[in-house]
Image 1: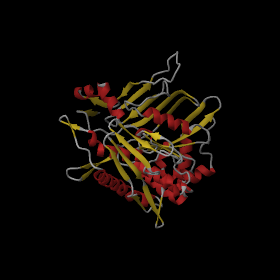
Image 2: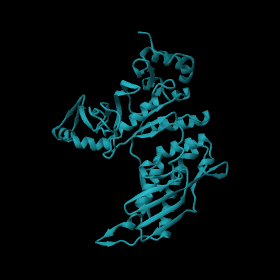
Image 3: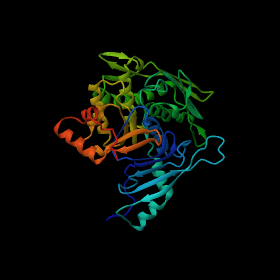
Image 4: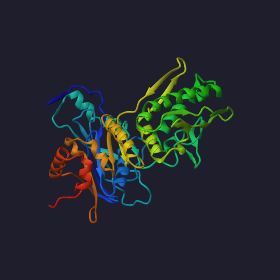
Length: 424
């Protein structure tokens, strides 16, 4: 047995099991996942998108997150403080007299500690429900849906106006005004939050005396430093896995300060992309290149970059290891470029749990012979609704034999009945 003497260094949790009660077309569904890479395959219309979006919603247990769907669903998280420990949370059912949307509360209903001997000190630590809840809340998932959002990507895509007031921040975009949490890109959210943290001292009060706000020229220099760090980060990754040769920030943005309204405004802040020696806007890129930029920037964006104004040093807060939901990453991407992206996803899965859907046989070639249990088949049963199952031992044995003697797992998917259920 393993003795757990003290609360250990935190290892990130991962989704080990999902039970969905009744969320059409998902009815009485149970799915198991592993840490690392997980691949879901299945026909169009089987319910994969519905499943991923619901799972992403349920797995986000942050305190301010509201849940309006998924009543009576259960999620089991493995790796809670230790690799052996698992915790199951359950969402409440709908009220009998429901007349409007109900924010569903969740609670811890089970803790599993197989083969682990808890000392009194550790048992007391794990027994504190709020300690476990705080741990789960600290690891929200990331959902990258298929395609590329047509809006909600300020700085990454379109030139938007950032308005920073004493009581909040909003972004004026082509379609509408948005709050930071309403943006469709984690990268855009991280950049905007970094800028907000940078200049919010213009609204602070020290010892009862308001601090003098920075001038627009000073703010401009701060923003250039922040954007320089973000573009340096992108330039280390994008040229390796996409046609983008370099990224830069458009230097012709403006900073305004309305002292009477205690408001800063930043206009024209947007990235530019170099392909084949030419500088282009995001909207001039091909759909496949947009998709690559969107996926890579979201997965790898630092949580924040801050500037120490006293030392002029940059501080980078990297993303925590988390669960990444990735929907059909192959869409619009050339097969040769897809190979590079899949290699990247494989590397990402060493640090993060990745649960992805695909219709591309090439994706299965990421798996080795020993990893066929990481494939989940999604199918729509006319009577039961969307159902999930793993490859049977017989199917796994057949696939391994094909991989050893004939060729790639992708070919086996193309030319066999990999998804077909076996007769009972």
